[in-house]
Length: 230
Ligand SMILES: C[S@@+](CC[C@H](N)C(=O)[O-])C[C@H]1O[C@@H](n2cnc3c(N)ncnc32)[C@H](O)[C@@H]1O
Image (cartoon, rainbow, N blue to C red):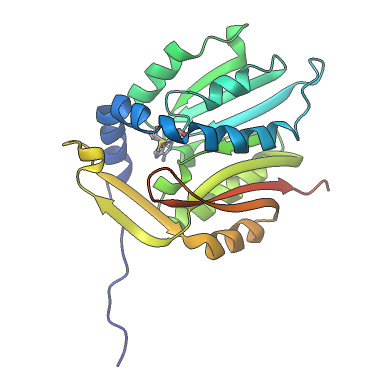
C-alpha cells in the first residue's frame, strides 16, 4: 500500500507568527536561556581562536538571530577589530540588543531586522557567520537555502558556527512555549546526520561536530565549519 501520510507544510504565516511570539516572549526567553550561556561561549571561543584578533586586521561577522545580543554579540564586539552585523526577526529582541550593545565606535555594529533568509550581502565579504539557536526556526528546505547563502557570503577560508536540533523534525509546532500564552513556536531539523550531510553538501568542511544536551533536555548538534581557501 502506498504511504499516504501527508507531508508536513509549515504555516504560510510562519515568519510573522514567529516574530509576534518573540516580540511577546523576548524577556522571558532571554532569562530562561541564561543557563545555556556557557555552551554558547564554549563554541564561540572555538571560533574566536580561529579568527585574527590583531587590531590591524579587520574581521567582519554576521550573526543570524542574535536575540538580545548577550552574551554572544557582546563578546564578538569585545574585539576592537571586529565589525558585527546582527540580524533578528523580532523588533523586541533588537530593541534590547540596541540597549545592551554599545560598541566603540558605534559603527562597528549594524542591527538588521527581518527574516535571515531575506538578507543579502556581497559574495565573499564575511569572515564568519554565527547562528545560535536560530536556523532551527526555519523550515527544513529553508535551512539548506540559508546554508547556501552563508557559503556564498563567506570569504574563502571563512567560518560558520551554528547549532541545530539533533533529532529529526519535519516541523514541530508548540502553542505555549515556556508556558507563555503568546509563545507559539516552530522548529525543524534534518537531524544530526542529515544536517551534517547538508552542511557538507553546500561545500563546507566540518571541523568541529559535537552533540550536546542542553540544560533543558534538548540535544543540539554544534557545528564549526570552514569554506575552502580556493
Ligand atoms: C532561540 S532564540 C536565540 C537567540 C540568540 N541567538 C541566543 O542564542 O539566545 C531565536 C532567535 O532567532 C530569531 N529568529 C527566528 N526566526 C528568525 C528568522 N527567520 N530570521 C531572523 N531571526 C529569526 C528570534 O526572533 C529569536 O530572537
